[in-house]
Length: 451
Image (tube, rainbow, N blue to C red; front, side, top):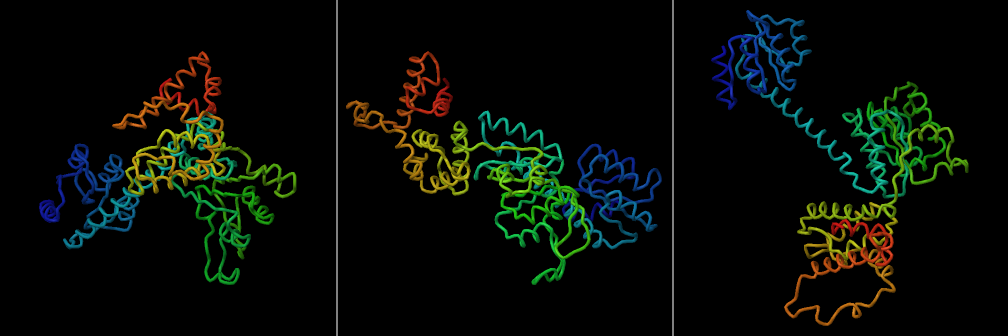
């Protein structure tokens, strides 16, 4: 039988290893990686179930098929409980065995792909995807790492575009619940009726158009995380219903009477001042304290200017790959304009600006002309009062044969920064004032040139 199976499966393109008994099979499994185990159940030295149990201990990903002439319900259930893909009776049809083998290996492949996909999703939401090296962002990273291991409710605050959902995803994908769903809901984008149905689901006939029962997103997020964005826009009635979920960890579908348990972690976010809304009776005080167990505030981009260059470079690299453009970075003038701009739309606005710039740019670096007009205008305003170019440029600085402008500009920047530091005895704040730059911009260029 072993020789027959080796020949048949070998002709199908499989590499086959044969073993005379269970002990020999386990020796082979210790020496080499194996995808699929086909074993008789009744053998002299040890049973096929014993072999499968030990083999699974060595390699949980191993697929198993049990073969027996004495199959019973008990042994079949035991084999399946131990992780066998299937079992077949002797005598069996060879074509039937081929189909079972193919199915076992296909399921194993899909399970491995699923694991890799989850790992990839997790990597997409690691801390490396929340970019920043400023002190304020380092504090955010540290807090996310700490609270990710808890089950406490989190309230993420910050202006629009600061990355509140990204922070919520980082909490989830670094938590023990990372293998379960992360479900995001924009509370401000749905009417009260639609939001209630989306969150809690509904039963058939609950309202016009409810032809079937429907699970709500709270059920979909079972044992995972639900992220409620713009919670400050939630109606008073929905606030009451959400409060019950937080307090009792149960809810009812719209039109239903049965209570359903809610094993979820809740992360909320808002760009509004909920404390002020509570004082104005626009938001329930009891709900506010329920969701504000752990507050996490994301600073606006204008307060973390040293992060702007690395964020911009990150977006340029990403969009250059997505759009198939040979853009490799930003010109020094462009970086300076980006740092000077106040970014009312925060990271989202910067991301959009970089996508636009990459799409329009025809050179290997992003030039100032490719930046949005608002960014260029801010730079022009900041430069008011500076000496005219003709007062600085000497008549013989542009040779007839031309030269590398980018490198020349970088050298001029380095020289001016060096001289400013020399004149101020290394005091960066004073050197920045001397050059008419913000301290954050000056610190960026000082680091850029290794000073």
